[in-house]
Length: 272
Image (cartoon, rainbow, N blue to C red; front, top):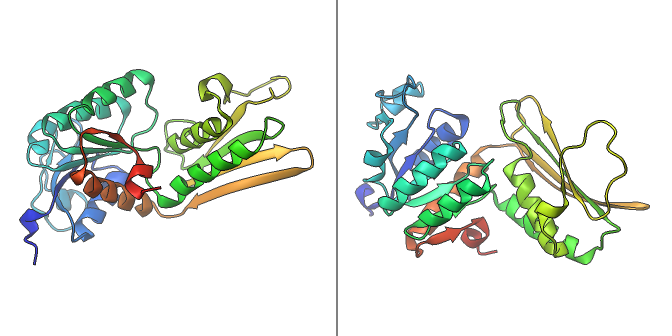
């Protein structure tokens, strides 16, 4: 029987958030990993408390801390669904600790991504706009359909999320847009249309459009619409359980233990 101390130790950042708490529950339920750290921002009222008690349950023997360097030093992996600036800081610290860094943070700009690429020279980083198997299959389907259809087929990506989501379009929507652009052999940056309001004029041929819906507690819904005169093709993924993202992130953290330093995505993890 494997001793629990031999299992990969994982730290969860942003542990008070919905994804953070889901990740904690997923790790605790796993027989392949153990929770060794929990990070929150300085000044948060969970800092210094036992994580289990902070979550409203029994003590877990893991104290919430605002010192990531100390927590990462005893971890083999860090799972991070926070904010771009925090993720960049965590990437550097995880690389110092040679811990696998699984990044589900969205809304990052090129400056953030450049720093993450630099950290990936020293450690394994798995970064994805979405950690679910279904969405990554949808990404591949989007690429293949886009490659098969010419610019007479308009491409629109419609996404819906809960009212608390702060970035738009979602990271998943942008991932799907990149897949469509790659299938077409174009750069998304040159054909992205996500700012329609007022008198916009006719749709530009070859553009990839984005629409974002925010409301209620929607976990995540994504449609990729290929529309031509007289017909439409709609590829759709509906997420009803945030646990699919947590399970995917844990899978990525375990997969990364056997990889060389570099930046990977969920297609690598899933072998798609």
